[in-house]
Amino acid sequence: MFVSKELRKKNIAEYLLYMWQVEDLIRANNLSLDSIKNNVISAYGLSDDDRAQLTEWYGNLVEMMRTEGVAQSGHLQINKNTIIMLTDLHLRLLESPKVPFYSAAYYKALPFIVEFRTKSNGQEKPELENCFDALYMVWMMKLQKREISEETLKATAEISKFISMLSLYYGEDEAGRLKLEDDEV
Image (cartoon, rainbow, N blue to C red):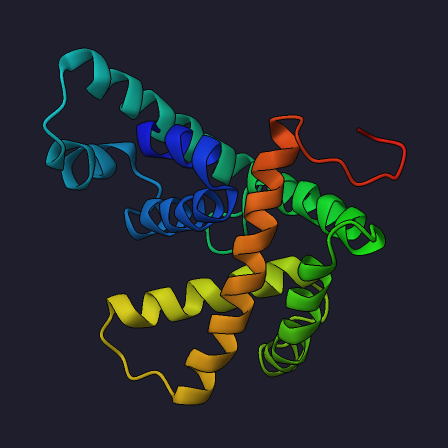
């Protein structure tokens, strides 16, 4: 909860990847709050108040995962909403002549996005979700110390640059500093 609040303010892309990891962590603990308390929350040196807040946060997420039918796979609606918000911003950025570097980063990453989408049968998912899937997959492979091909590393590096730029623009937009229209000052 504490990490997620900070990441949400600081870097929306890292926040989303973190929240996907939290979903997987909850699944790894069989959606059991007792298991999460023993295996996750107890590892932090928290005050009683902070431990209670974190327990409540995990409990709410567990309940949401059950209610939304994502106990086995998929993502919470709050995380899907983040993809929707990012997609809206992405489309606005692509339409604006004021951010040519963003469009260039996107079109440089696009062949890799399309290739990943095809290989992972992600045609039904939003394009940005495919990007985050690719980044999350490589992150998990690194954590598991699995071998990652140079081709995959190159592809995800381009996707990462694109998503990083989107995340920066998201922060600017949230702060009210992003001006994409010609009449905006």
